[in-house]
Length: 312
Image (cartoon, rainbow, N blue to C red):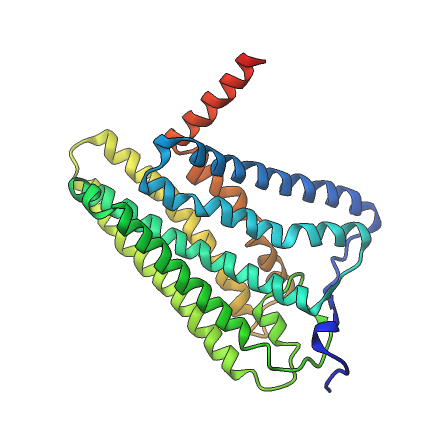
């Protein structure tokens, strides 16, 4: 049944948070604390890289989009979620839902794009250290960043543009946030084009990122094993191992909700949890693993704090 009026004046109802009255304020405090920590950690990494010329190197320039992207991803869901916790109002306008879905997909896809670029950078640095300066020039860096981001943004915009011509026939969304599969279920007409293109982008992002990470890290592992310097070998293996764990967590977090929408037997509560967690856990973990754990960034942050303390 088609709904009367313009789609862009529709108000949708997201799935209830199902919070008991006694849990509203503790949940709000936990949520706002988590959001504050995400912004603080990620913006600290951004400011540290931007203000220190010593960090204006390919490795850190490729890292810089990650905290920006993580802050964007968290901001996409936290303000509306915190408002919903306090007010228990789960409504959202259709345009706002489309925008939230678009940004969530831009964020999740960008996470893969950034990890691909970083994996390639580490591969060149460890496997071909003598050629690193010649390969990772400013010109090539601009080409890598521009090319990957243009393809990524174009792919996601096309995905959501396929939803726009179709009318909406229901206003209840059985998810906690808006994203492409959940929005598609509101549409009455055949959305096969969006579904097929969505599967294509899912295979492209996850397949390409898995292939690049597997290829580069296998070669890094071989190089480390054959390296006679034990300290460098252990350090490289520890770094790569940590990065791989973060990568596989991201892979599972992003792919599970998309597949769950296509498999009716998957419990709905699991789908809802993972659709939220992709904008919560990576923005918390990434600045710790890729930022504060990196020696050069950690030293710059600590020296900045020391100067502030001394000046006070």
